[in-house]
Each structure stands twice: as C-alpha cells, then as structure tokens.
Length: 69
Length: 432
Image (cartoon, rainbow over all chains, first blue to last red):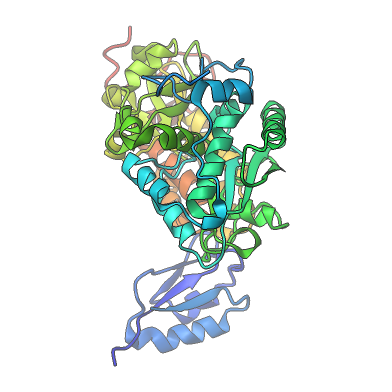
C-alpha cells in the first residue's frame, strides 16, 4: 500500500505564536519577524513525519495541523 | 405594455449612471424588461438549464474574486442539503460605490437575480445583505421587497439583512458567520460556505451586481450577454472611478475599454495621470507610462498581474504622491484586520509603518527590501485573503514608485506634502 502524504497546516486564528513548532521542526517551519510560523506547504518528507507529529502534539493551542492526503 | 426587446449596447444595469437615479419601481421595471423568467416551482430542485446558460454566457463574480458563477451554482446545487442564497451587497471597499448605486437605482433587477439564483440551485431561502449605513440602498430594497410581496411575484420570501460596516464584513465566510449569529469575522476554512454555510446548509454567496447580470442573462441569453465585453470578461461591468478626474462616480463600461479612454470619459487628462490603482484597496498600482492603452478587463489586466476586481479605478495625478496614497490605504487595511490572525495583525501594522517611513523620506537603505519581504511573508497566512490583498497593493507600490522612494530618501521628506514640484521620473518626457 502506498503511504499517504501528509502536509502541515496552521490554523492562523488559533495560533498565538508560541513558536514550539519552529523549535521542534526547524527543517519545515520558520518564524516570521513577529514570531508566527511559516510552514513549508510541500508534503512532509517521510523521515520528518514523526517529528511533525511531535510538533503537532506539542502546540499549546492545537493550531498546528497534520493533513492526510 | 410589452417590453421592447433586449437592450442594445450600454448601459444595461444602470439607466443614466448617475447617483441621483431614483429607484425603478416594480411596475416600471416590469414594463421595461418584462417579468423575471422564473420557472415558478423551486420545489422541483435545481434548474440545470439556467446554470448551463450562465456557463455559456461566461458570467463571473463582480465582488472582487472574478470566480465563474456557473461553477459556484453547480457546487451549491450539488450539495447534500437544500441550499441558501445570499446576495452580498455589503460593499466594504471604500473606493467602490457601484453596489450601493445599483441597489438604490435598480432594486428589482437585483431581486430578479436573487430569485433566479435561488431557482438555479433549488434554494428555498434567500437573504439580501446590505450595509446598514447605506441608508438609501436599504430604503430602496425595503420598498422593493414590499412591492414584490404585495404582488406575490416571487415563489419564495426574500429576507433583508442590514449588515454592519467594515472592510472584511463582506468576505464570504465572515458574512455567513454573522448571518449565523456570530461576529462578522472570517472563519478558518474549510468547510467553505458553498459546502456548509447559513444554518449549516450549502450557501451561494454572490455579489449583487453579479445577480443583476444574471437577471438579464436569463432573459436574453448567453449570446446577447457576450455582445459586450471580452472573451474572458463577458458582459458589461460597473466601475467606480475616483481620484484625478473631474467627474468621479460609477460608470457602466464594456470590459476591454482602454484605461486612457476611461480616464477621458470621466473628465480626466490621461497624460496628467501617473498611475492608477485598479481592483480596489486590495488591488494593484499600474504605471500609466506603460499601461495607458491597456484594456480594463480581467484578461488584459491579468497579463500584468492585475484584475478589475470589484471594479475600482483610482487615478493618481502626476502632481500626487503614490507613497502617500499607499501609506494611507495600508493604514486603513491594517485597521480593518479582523484581529484574528497574528501575521495579519502584526504584519499589516508593520508594513504601514514602514511605508510611512518611505513616504516621509526617513527610511533606511534596506526598508524597501524589508517591506517586500514582509509583503511576501504575510500573503496567504490569514484565515481570509485580507493580508494577501494588502501584500499585493504594497508590492505593486514598491515596484511602480521605486524612483519616488529614492527621491524621498534623498530629500528626507515628501516634496508633494511640502507643496514643491514632483520628482522628474526617468520617463517624464510628456510633462511640461
């Protein structure tokens, strides 16, 4: 079975810019000049998926989302 | 009296194009155009033939997005539940008055369109949203709804909703959220209104000018509809022109009309115009040294990354300052953020402050580059497209007014503010 691709998304309304995602997943998330995450829109490479899940779980406002395709 | 065949040429939607147009009452409206071609039974479900006619006519949304109406109709008609139709006449765009003029002068044309859209998607509920502060538009619509009720013209009831003022209120998801009893602020989509909108039902949100076009397209057919406009921008268009013209106001034009012709028609001098802002506050500046003959249509404007949007044209004179204008608009847009998303709240404020520095000639060497980066960073990072629009405006200003930025820095102030001469740009040969 082909593995499903996953992408990261931010709910910009609930995000408060705590910045944990950028610390846990710097390969895929950077912060803008005001501390809010800019997430790479491409599918997350397989080797980063586990880290992405951890970042999602760590978000204090549950604003970081993992979208299965 | 029988109506006298399809209208030829312009105008189609307006009668005189003047703000003093009195509302056309129901009897006069029906005498002029005949009754709306309603099928009469919304319980039968969607009217596919009408959707096909809209598709063939190429009618696109006139609220700013330019989205093909037929695709929206189909998506809503295909929903799992019976849909709701929302006519969007909130017109939060400060540089636009065309929807208010249309609502106050041709209320029944809009309401015919609302009924036809309801039939097309099989809706039994139709809501017309008008900005509460637009008194004349509200009164005109109230009277029109009463007239139709008295004559039992429509198969379903029309509800009027007086919406609060604000730039973002008219954004689809914000309007639906407000109609559902919430604050008029955008939601993080999906689901989009066409899937789950008013009362959780599939909801067609359509600009009032689009609906007025539908009222005519349904009467006279797609071929007639396409007699005016361009292949990619069919039908006439309402445009609000302001700035350096002696007769600002709403004009009904054929899309494709060259910018120079438009400026002349409004009592302006094309050679004295430096740039235009096209599309609205979330639109783009276009340098008129290069684009004076460009046509005002989405296909031609699209070639330079612009669009007619909600039909806004602001003319900047050579004696004006594009940085001052852009700063003013960016400030306004920052203030109109619904305050929900960090990048929009912080980014738009920062961008407006940076522009102000450029305008006052107090910027550093890297300010313009920083603004360009910030514009790129905020685009696409809100729940709605508000930051994207601001980013587009600012990016175009940095491009079109790049000479001005250097000039302001060199003098440490804005010479236009100081009443002095405007900078001679590299292509100012025609002035003098």
